[in-house]
Length: 57
Image 1 (cartoon, helix red, strand yellow):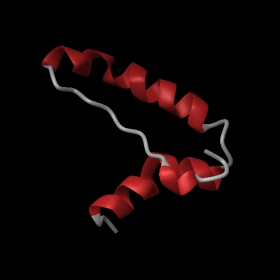
Image 2: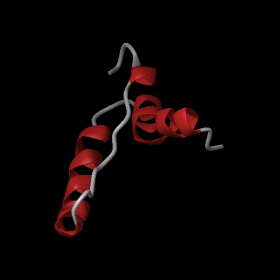
Image 3: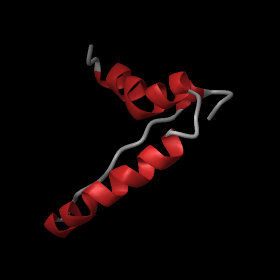
Image 4: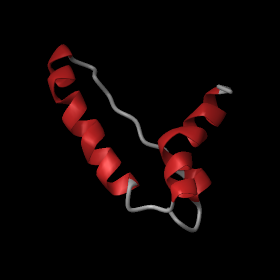
């Protein structure tokens, strides 16, 4: 991820309603390992790469 941070993004899939009860736990888990990355790489993986893919400014 550090060598090619533009190639990764994270997300979640709540394809059944029961998955919503675990959503906060899932996001907290992402935040833990994103916090171990340099800020620029974490921002890209957590937000910017997905925003770029979908044309979000």
